[in-house]
Length: 173
Image 1 (cartoon, rainbow, N blue to C red):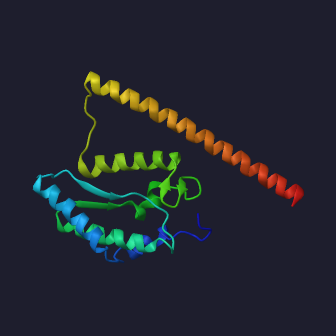
Image 2: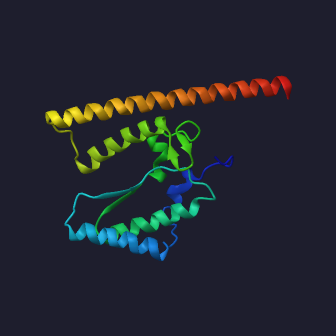
Image 3: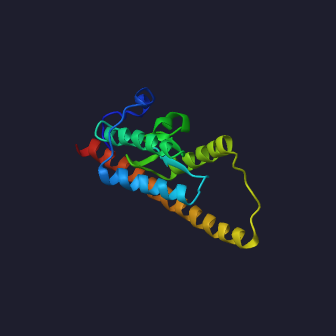
């Protein structure tokens, strides 16, 4: 992670800043959107999940704005959550694995935020599961809980190692 501050808090002011996609990216995106239209897919929402935007990665943010424009040309919604890091409640030091990926804590925060967002803006609501769906859900939930516990133990071990390294550095440094 770069020691320089992120640019996420300033992104709303540069919401219209854009860079063109490469020809391959543009063609692939337009092909996907045309396919969605040809299949008459109406309930499609494209998203850009939160990242830590830095000077080095700012062009990706600008290209994601271009993606939003192209998606809109085809009549679909595009949600860029890089602009909503503060609203989501993400802490750059605690909730990211690296600049491109949320860790388990960030994933939990973002999932809760996205769930509420989809309910509020798209009218999604829970529905009853069949017995087989419930059984599959329970398997997935058990796996997820194991994943969370595993990641928490890794993070706790890492924090303990960092504390020990600081202690040793102060004693011997």
